[in-house]
Image 1 (cartoon, rainbow, N blue to C red):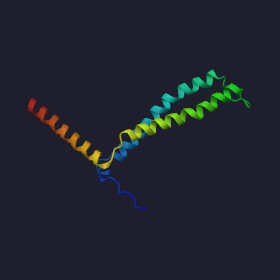
Image 2: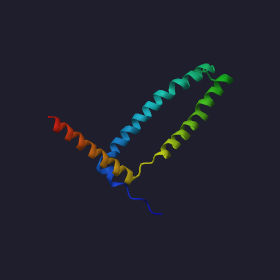
Image 3: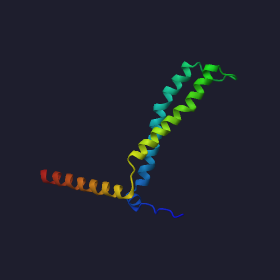
Image 4: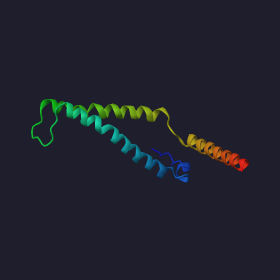
Length: 113
């Protein structure tokens, strides 16, 4: 089985560091958005911390929080990730377009000065 060589454009433009930073930022945002509804669901179902035997409603709330909700969010993430894949050619064209836009913006700024 042969491996696909890494995209050189991503390494040359430092997308690895930016991609990692965006991944961590996304994780923090998702965590801050996902926790309050989960905690509200546990509160509604009667969850009490530090109890050896939780109530049946609390067990149902825990099971619902850790089973179907993450599965649905994972499925949605896969759908969104597959909707617009970023391959090496597309990445290179985006870099070229951004470079042209920056050059055009600098040209208009220089012309106005």
